[in-house]
Every structure is written in structure tokens, then in C-alpha cells.
Image 1: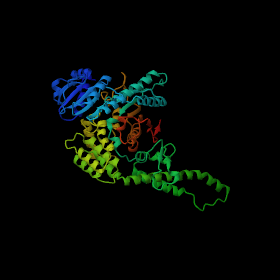
Image 2: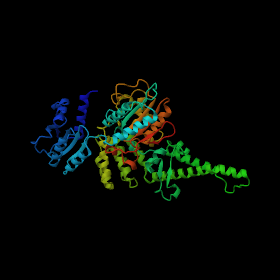
Image 3: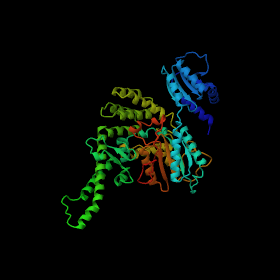
Length: 548
């Protein structure tokens, strides 16, 4: 808990993000004091910062050869001074950092002032005023429904996680009578995480039934819109997939696509055996009664067969049409392997394939950017040129840099890409020796390691502190995980498997949304605004998908 070191690291990140070249540090009275407390002049000179100026100084010279790093408190006076600065910029490019939250109207005013487009980046990620109360309400509602008054841990590298933790704690303290549940031997635990720590998982194609349906068709309140499926019948234009009421779906939620194909075939064969014979005779009252008794069951089975054959057929068509098997193989290589030469060649090959969809191409470049953003031979500019040659829209091209800003190395609180400690390196080595059953499912989300360490009592307090003085001494039993920026069905599968294999542990997963490409384009969007959907997946047995 070293405050000086924390501030020093924050200033270092600001400087490093501007890249190589001569820089000026533009500050106000307070931030000047802050920086001078943590850095000596000789130390900061080594980072190519050669000039220190005050934003309110009127006698600064034009120095277009310098990059400006602005570190300011979000006061009205500073915003006004910055607006005046952008009207008549004295430096080549501006990287703007605020020490706290600024309003939307102030961001808009800065954008309007940037007529010469000299601003490269504005940092100050935080909750929108209306969203934090909404998420707090949803999360505390879940706690009340589950009858849990938890201890709270949060991701230290995320200010948003800390603020949500404090907001939930404030409600629990204020409404202590509502949260006065029967005490358990081991208190429940609420773990609040930030999506930016693992931006890779939402970018990967998934191959379990539930995840594929959500990604390729869209699953909204258990409903799927099939109206655009070629030749679809009227009664199948919208279907419901609910694990509560559909035994086949419940049993196949977490199975991979190959297993689903086999099970669909078995379902069809079973249906054929139970199908009433065309010439069935109804000669007696008992014959009629048997037919009436069996007909609803037959009709229900007929509907189940038709629905799942249609859904799986459409999934298969889309997989083939969009070359998703090839795309997924390269995605997994980017996420799990460390061969830069092979990775960039395979990404380039798919970018040049006209059958690969535009968003799939952009996601591949995003994955490459996250994986090799600091590689000495990074081919990112060349891959961006490939996107431009494909005619990819400017909006989608900009998503690549936005992804790096959202979940790149300087943002992450953990080392998502490279194993650094001896234990992690050894685990990776043996995993490589053993191999994997399926080339399309090599990746494990960061959440798996986080929960595994939590359950084993190894999750570091320095990275995931408790809110308040108390801490758990025993292995947690009831764990509620909430991810700011949204969860994925791959993470739901991880929770499901942990619940199956860890006796005595019950985990519930929630987030501000459940990601798919169509719904959010990419996990960058939560950087600007959060979806009002608030979703929890039970994942404690074979059922999941409780929407609140």
C-alpha cells in the first residue's frame, strides 16, 4: 500500500503511452506538486520529458516539435484553460489526463475546441452518473434475493471496481436491517472485477451451444430471432431457448458444436421411433385414450426437434459461410501461442479472404494488437493497411486502437499475456506437453485463474483488496462475481465447471452485459457507456441465464 509508488506508476504510464520523442508536461498548480513529490527532475528527464509548464501560464512559446502530456485536475478553470490551449495549440499533439471525473458536457466542449485535431487521447475513465446507481441497485437486489450480506473484494487496478464496491457497501450499511440474514460459518464473498483486465476473452469465437447461439443468432431474454433464416417457416421465426423448459437445451448448454451435432441426430432418431404410425387404428375407447394421452408429449417433442434442428442448421450455415473454423483456429493461436511470425502470416491470410466477415477481420487485428502490441517486429500498421484495402469502415478500424486503449498492457492490472512467475511458466510448459483435445478451445479466460487462486486462498490482497478491515480466513463457499464491462459465456462455462469440480463452493457470475459481437461490437463500448441490461448466470448446476 505505497501511495508514492502508485502515483509514480500512474505518471509513468501517462508518459509511456505517448510513445518515443521529446515531451512537455503541462500541469496545474496542484498536479505540479504531485509530480514533484514522486519524481526528481533527473528521473523524469530520462523519460524524454524536457519541459515543465503550467496550463495557466500566458508566456509559453510555440514548440511544435514537442508532444504535450496534460495532467490536470478536472476543475472548471483548468477545462477552460485547456479549451483556450486547443484553440491555439502550441505543441504537435496532446495527451490529456485528468486526475478525476469530468462531465460529458466538458468532454464535448474539449472535442469542439479541438478544431485542428491535435488531441491524441483523453483519459479519465469512470462511471457515468446514471449508471453507477443502476448497477448498484441491480447488484444489491441480487444480494437480497440470495439472502447474502457479503464481504467485498475488488480489483485494485480499477477505480471503477473500487467505486462500485464502495457504493454497494454504502447501501448495505445504510439498509443494515434488510441485510441482517442468518450468519454462516464462512461469510459470502462479492468479487468485483473489470473487463479491461481481460479484453481478449470477448473477442474469441466460442463453440458451446449457448455461446454460439448468442454470438451468431443473438439470445435476448431466452428468445432467438430466426426471421432472417432462408426458407424459415412462420411458426419458427422466433423461438424460445430456456434451460428451465427445454430438456435438450439444458443438457447441451455447455457441450461443443461437434457433440451437439451427434445429439441432434440422436434426438431425431428417438423422435422417429416415438412418432405415431400413419395407419394407427383407433378402434376402442382405450386406443383413443392412449392417443390423447400421448399426443401432447409427441407434439412437444415435435416442436423441440423442429426448433433445435433449425437452430443448429442455421449455426452450421453461418459457420461455413463466414469461415469461422479457420478464423477461430487463428484466434486461438493469437490468444494461446507465442509464434509471432506464424500469427501475423495467418492473420494476413484471413484478412485477404473475402469470405471472412468484416467484424471477424477486425477482431483478428484487435487480438493481434493486444497480443503483440509491444513486440519489436509488430506488423500492426501493415495489418491496418490490409483492413483499409478490404474497405473496412473507418468506425471499425478505429476500434483497434480503442481496444488497445481499453485493455492494452498499460491498462491491465495483471499480466494477461505472458507468464512471469515460475509457477505460471511451469504450468504453461506442462500444458504444452500434454496438448489440448480441441484446437478451438485452448483458451482459458483470466477469470479461471482468478477464481482458482481465490478458492485456494492465494489471491493476492495487494491486487484484490478487501473493502474494510476484515478478511476471510477460511476457503470461501458462496462467491458472487461481478464483471464491470460485461461477462461472456466462456466465463459462464468456467464457473459451471468450477461448481462441478469444487465441492462446497458455489459461484454465481454476473456483469453489466453478456457480450456478443452484434450486441456490443466489442468490449470497448463499456469504456464510454454501460448497457442497462444486468445479467446473472446461475451456473451452479446445468441451468444458467437468470436475467434481472
